[in-house]
View 1: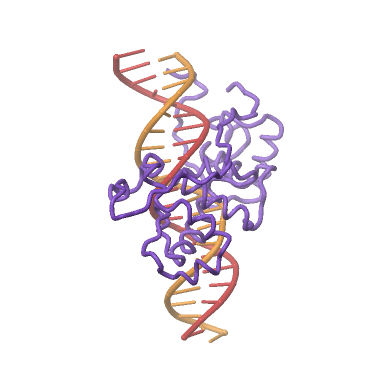
View 2: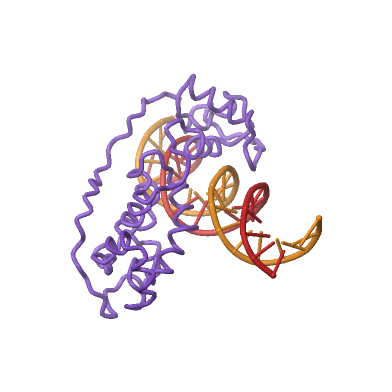
Length: 201
DNA sequence: AAACGTCACAACCGCCAGATT
DNA sequence: AAATCTGGCGGTTGTGACGTT
């Protein structure tokens, strides 16, 4: 069982967009006390929000190390490559993009990259060329991405676990898909321990 | 100018794994 | 071992901004 400080409370929380005042309260509190203990943070910070909501707001929007603004071409290429390698593991992908959040990467994928790949004739789920030759001119228009794509169509055959959310049809290597070796992405996918000080609740 | 459609993204929801008691 | 809680993740939704008719 848990300590009394962590007992579930019957509280109705504000939902919806955060106000500047709420943001400031959260920033002030975390600057003073650090991250962590999200459950008790709202009350301590004078917020009528769930701890979950506070965490999300901080992680996705208020953190000072966030890189706001457009995702540049290099970041975009990296997202595509990492998605081919990792699937919808947005937190892992975001971890390779300094200053970007999983939510931001996920949104960017769903609103920009998914469509872009589809226009190029590439299935965004598995990064296969859907029909060889389809929309080839579009591929040629984006030489940078296309050159990155050409070596790893068929990647999922080596990477089934990364696409665990996909339907079963994506788990076979049939249909004559060419299976090539993984490109040397030089991604250094070691997962390091976070450099966050431990705080006690 | 108004109505409508589409886009972009912040925020919420449900689920899960791990920690704690 | 079981119950409970927290933090984290991915999927989805709500809504304001913007473009088009």
